Length: 294
Image (cartoon, rainbow, N blue to C red; front, side, top):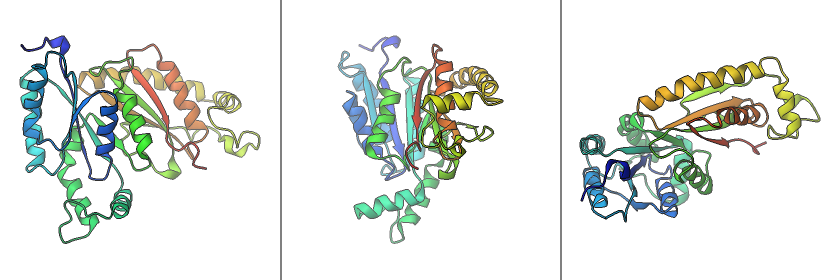
């Protein structure tokens, strides 16, 4: 018997670049009690959902790792998602990304070739795969850049999104990530806020060793001209933009908040934005990408 609409099976599709952490992401969902299938041909996704609906509630949260080992990957995946929609089911796509340098190092450390490099170099395979996945990345609900994440940090990010927080899988989840511009912008950011217009506590000897999580630093930053106005204005902007994203079917939004080193201003402002969004319909998580790097 088909399950009622309000009991719909959750399906997460994990895909992305080879070497970007698909296996670790899948393992994190397994640890949360999800039923996970690796290397599933896209054409079998509707069958997987059908079988779950016949399980009498035994399988309610499913994930499938889908990658370029499947022929006609992009076309098959798009067709499968359309078929799921026609059956009244929905799927969320998680795309794992990483920089070329990071992927090369990971393949070198594991002493294995890239699946698409053929007789060429690892970089040739990475370039070919990135081009093949361009459309899928554009359609993804959540893009995670794992370049600076170890396995444990990647699993923590997945838990933040899928452990069943205050918003259901069908609701909107906002990830606020502080970062330092000198380490590069997060490639998975949907929105970017630049806090470098505020004076840098780095140049104040008693504040320099502290972080944006310490009260003296936070108080100093919030006392600066424009800080409170920025927070008020940006919070109102988010209250307009986030519902629009949700109406358009987007389920995961990443807001990157940057300063020079990702230690003081961006950390404090990211946590302030989280606090100001508390009590809204959005599930908000905060991560500090570059805290501790100095």
